[in-house]
Every structure is written in structure tokens, then in C-alpha cells.
Length: 213
Image (cartoon, rainbow, N blue to C red; front, side, top):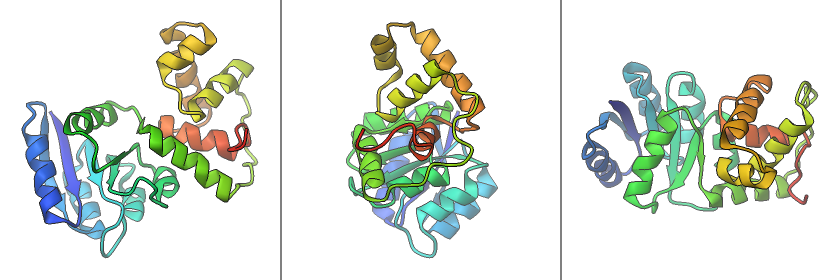
């Protein structure tokens, strides 16, 4: 059973999400929160598999709440703003996924399962938003760089940062899905990244990929 906490300052949305999640036999809501502070408290108490986290909440925003619980639960940020200025910060804080509130119910349920399974989930609009963020505020490459990453792994990392799925990467490189997954597993270990979302961040911050490239 996948245990979920719903954090949103709008009671109607919390109720809607709870009804949707509880309608699935493999999902259950174990807590709700109307503020960022409550989200942290409930997550630390219940230790759910996934927290559906709103970005803009009173007392503490979803970014800081995510930062405080990322080692306890995986966070799927759900917002109504497709151009939310907090996309980049949410991923840096440790969010494993980012979806819009107008996402079809079936896709939201699928996203919960994907994130609970240890994968990262980024909607195409989120990847584009991330690139736009780097365009406006270029970052200085990290000193650590990509030491130990092979040329092929760098190529895979570049494609991940461009928003390609595993299947698309396999087709582009003309290799098997298993090979792509092996490269990604090694990248996660070498770059000490939690998931795919963190790999995207690293690709840009290391200077491997530029928004204009």
C-alpha cells in the first residue's frame, strides 16, 4: 500500500485529492496539511511514501517544507501555475516530481506510483520551465564537475537534461533500454543524485548543458 499525505491550503482541493487517492486499492491518504508547517509535522509523524505538496502555502512554503522532509518522504509538487517561479527551487530542494493541478486524474495517480517507486517525474512543461530558468539566471559551474563520468554517460546525461525519456534515449543512441538504465544507475551513484530530477540540475550546474545549447 502506497501511503500519501496531501498538503494544500485549499480545503476543497485537499478533499478532492483525498477522494481520488483513496479510490485506488493500492493508495491511501494517511494525513492532510493546510500549511507548510503542518506538512512537515504530518510527514515526520506518518512517514508517508509520497507527499503531494502545494508550493504556495501559509506559514512555510512548499519549497522549505520539501527541504525539511526530503530524507523522510518523496515529494510530488502539484501547483496550478505552469510558469511557477519555484520550479527550479522545488527540484533543488529535493522534489521528485512536478505536476500541474489540471493534470488528468489518471495521470496524477500514475505519477504518485512512479514517484513512490523511486523514479522522478517531470512534465514536459516543467523541463522547458527549468531551461528557461537557466536562461534568465545562468549559474556558475560547480567545482566538483563531472569527475569520473565517462563520455557515454555524459551523452546520456545531456539527453536526460533535454527531457528525453529512457525509450527516446535508447532510440537516439541505438542501444537497449537495459543499457540506458545501467548508465543512469551509474550516473546517480557517481553524481550522488537522488533521482532523475537531480541529474537534470547537475547537468546544467556542471556546465555540461547550457540553456542556449
